[in-house]
Length: 78
Picture 1: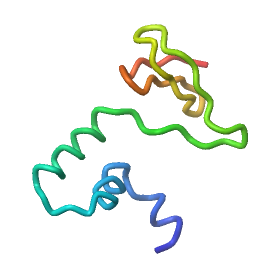
Picture 2: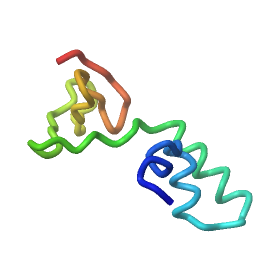
Picture 3: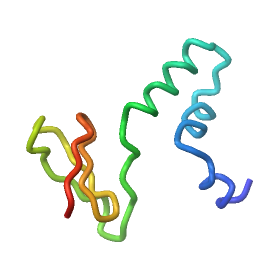
Picture 4: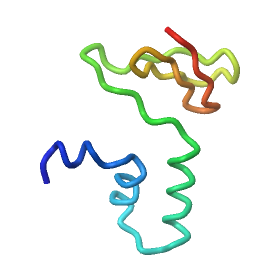
């Protein structure tokens, strides 16, 4: 498989592929998890940029030009 084909996969498809399970309940939980959590941050030459969330005090990731909280999903412009 080419890198492009792997990049074209959705996050949900990648998680299901990594889990490699035929259990319908497990697959359903993975789909729900992927829908309920933000995508992981992009890796930049500077690494992964993080800061604290003003709402829940958890970690926010820099995603392009937006901060996204990994816990509550709160978003802020840069």
